[in-house]
Image (cartoon, rainbow, N blue to C red; front, side):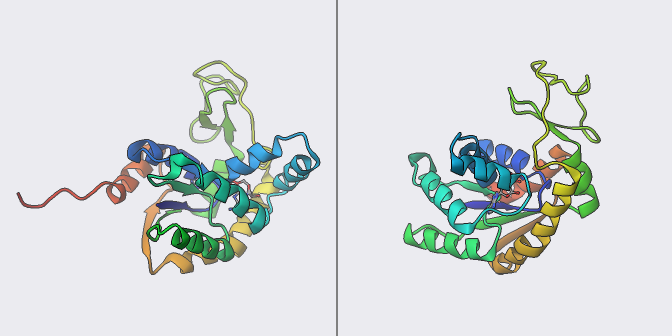
Length: 218
Ligand code: AMP
C-alpha cells in the first residue's frame, strides 16, 4: 500500500495516475471522493461544496467514512495508492488502525517535495479538461489554443479552489495541519522525491522506488 504525500499542487494526482497504471492498483484521491459527494443536490452536498471552496480541510470523520467505504470495494484487495490522505496526524493514526484490522502491511510513503513559490504558479495556472481529464498549466504546459483542450476541443475549467486567496489558504493549512504527518512516517518506509521538475522527470524519480531492484548477480 502506497501513500503519495505532498503539498497541494505537488502533482500527486498526475503521479498517482502514472503509479496506478504501472502497478495496476487503484489510485484513491480523497479530494475526488469529496468532490463527487459535493455534486449531490442535497443539503449535505451543498454544504460540502461550500466547504471545499474555502480551502479548509473537511472533518476527519467525513473523509474517514468515505475512504473506508471505498477501500471496502473489491478493486482494493490487491493493494491501493492513496492521494491526499492522510492529511492530519489523526488521519494517519486511523489509517494505521484500519490497516492493522485488515492485517495489511505498513504503508510506503513517497513525499513529493516542491517549494511554495512554485506551487502557487502550478495551482493558479492549472486548468483541466472536463471531458478527457487532461491537466494543463498556463505557465508550464499551456494548451495550443488558450482555454481549449488539445485532445477534444472542450472548454477548459479551473477548480473553484484554485483561486489565489484560496490557494494561499490551502498552503497555510498544509503547513499547519498536514506537514506534521511527515514526522509520523519518517521512521517507516519513507522516500523523498524532488517533484519541482517536469512530469516525466518526476515519473523517472519515482519509478525506482516502485519496481523491484534488478538482481545484481546471476
Ligand atoms: P485535493 O483534491 O487533494 O487538493 O483536495 C481538495 C480539498 O478536499 C482539500 O482542500 C480539502 O478541503 C478536501 N480534502 C481532500 N482530502 C482531504 C483529507 N484527507 N482530509 C480533509 N480534507 C480533505
